[in-house]
Length: 116
Length: 115
Image (tube, rainbow over all chains, first blue to last red; front, side, top):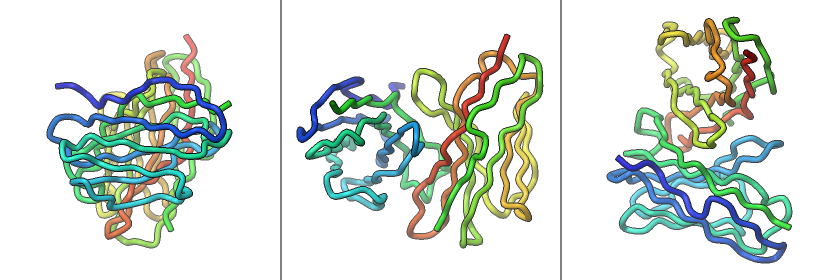
């Protein structure tokens, strides 16, 4: 069974640009969560989507947005990039919503974004 | 608000030594869940264990064991007879039951097992 797939794996952008990251969850999983990982802040929750609806959101500015499609694939977008947005963006999928499942999130290998 | 603290940023031990990773949490809920995840160099986090707030029984899985103590709000993780393959970043996480049930992670402990 294929795992969580994130694309692209690496990308370099400059300040002010925007970026779109993609996540394909494990087949049958309906929940997709996004996390930002940086050396200083660790893993920070961005948002969770379930059945195309955002059900939870972390404390990030409006420049960070996401969506989920009917096939459960998800994208996140960061507009007007800042240097501080350089991070590893991790996507995790699960069968049901974060609160109702066993808590076993299945993570992808991440998209490493560098903002110059 | 929920919070997870992993005070140990980095630990190095020699192979075959035992090592304990500390995790202290804060929550106002009486029903909550605690987790440990492992992040090897490849990047993807791997689920290790989930524990609910009503189950304080310690758990052992092979060389791994977990000690949950509500009195001290701690959920510590011990690796016995460590191996080089245990080298990774380990994250403790917390989820409160209820509407705001997102899983919040600590900042992680980087564990180096030296041969």
